Image (cartoon, rainbow, N blue to C red):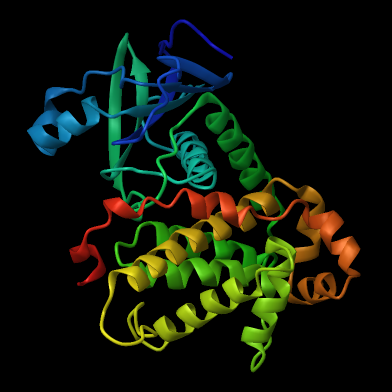
Length: 341
């Protein structure tokens, strides 16, 4: 839904998520309302007080004012003078949207995110806290996927699914899925290809439940559900790359002969594909509630994998389109120095 104006009024608390360096679709409106209490805009609407400018410094203030994407949430409050659970709830909603964006496609962010919160008192926006948070570091060669209205709407669906899914959690329930989400995010904020590739494959393993001593065999066979049954060589290679990195070798350890650009570009492509596959597994799961109960704990995950093949495929849904991701790999932007050549 579109709205012409975003306003903060007296008696409201607010929170803003500021994303720097995002690729924004040219058709995205300057202001777009995702739902009644959530807005997306291309410009940060506040002018920070001098005390914040003095504390943060000129360059950081410039980053905040020039953020390419601003997401805002607000609510009414009678406790405007303090930072409390209301502010934390607003910030959590924004972080869920950010996770939704990270699970909806490749992200090319260039700097850390800012999360601001405060309250509106006597016609003045009082920012009470500013947090600086790690940003997703894109892999060179990744396709440029813009932030569009459609992507924002999908991100909202993922965010709402995450909030609903988290409400189901009690004790140790869904621990493998939450670990998968955690290692996926850990991979995104890593700079090193080894760590990225290793963590993305581990995120995929959260759904597979590999048995000790049979991890490789299960990874290859069970990823058929995600990929189809003609890509076993791809799954085998992903697992082998993950294993050499697990044992503290570099990502190019399996290279034969002298270091060469062709092989190292191939490994970079596998890094992108592992990211996209991990993202597909997580987003497909979160947006498909009929899957949730099957991954509640280790016993139920094992029972899921024992279901008839047709039943599993009906539950899981359409497979991952590896070819689409592979065709989007932009190898010419990767320099020899990126490949340690």
